[in-house]
Image 1 (tube, one colour):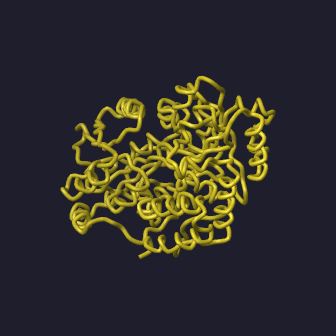
Image 2 (cartoon, rainbow, N blue to C red):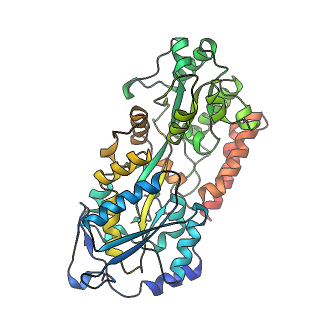
Image 3 (cartoon, rainbow, N blue to C red):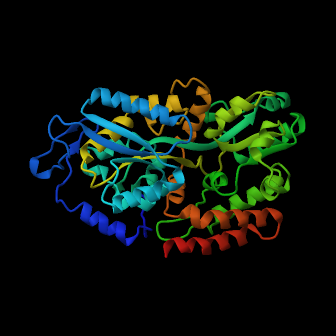
Length: 440
């Protein structure tokens, strides 16, 4: 599991936590099926409400799209089952969420719940409850979720949250161009191409499919890291940087060859041309992007057919996951109810409803195939990619301040490498020095 070596929490937050959580009451327990039950009186956290009194939980929430309405439906369902509980969904801009949580804790009024990302949890994990202390079989609960994302919410062996949805990088392809070139994409995980086979296919589609370029890649950090993991490389290790390795250099060299052969246009990384626009215009055979593009392409591509296919592999199959979670916080006085709601919202049935309404991927292994109103077959491919994703991906991208420290020099180094100003070996060595900052 991910280990945090240092945190950015201010001393006042630590002080507030020590004061706010000094009641001496240990938490009650909740069953792994989402139902709460009392432990022995000596080891229970008291609810703030008297018997029969309405219990109010404030949930801090940021929105990307339709998921606010979907979460409100989950809340309504939960409140119907638990009429003594009222959950207030309080919207906060994403950029303000971390500060809002920290200031609420410092002020002695922590929220009961909050929607989080890996970066929010990395900053605020001291303030979260450890769900392992509230659940009889926490290992059984964790086993319900994709192993490749555990590092995002299990921090220093503390279960800080549970996931509600995930994102996956993957391959969206121009079906019309592939059909015109007579190239059939892999239909099942058993048929997945190697990267060399994939390049051969792209060259044929580029020659015979009526497109100018074989592939575009959104960016040289998060989206490109999918290729890094497939070649067996990664950015970080348990004890220090791990980027300067033969596997990383192989991935970098292969990437540079894609640009040098003009399979991937240099203009997308060096000239500011938008990969999304290029794919939508029909110029490109494949877009290495993510499942969040599905509704965009559904609504905006009218001139050709498109689909989702399995990514190629090198040493590994892998994607790079993202996603959101629900966390509960100490000192709210309604810890038991907050944990119970998290278990309910992330249960199979409730999570399936939430993800279908939001057009999100589910983090649950038993929700890999959902009855989406659109693109069911596309979501299943993305879900399969996540099932085969290496844990290094979430270790890297969930590491405290990894994106803040690494993203810009990674991007700039890749630009320099693609432009021919430095070698793959140079970039690997330079990034190794940058990543040392995370371990200081």
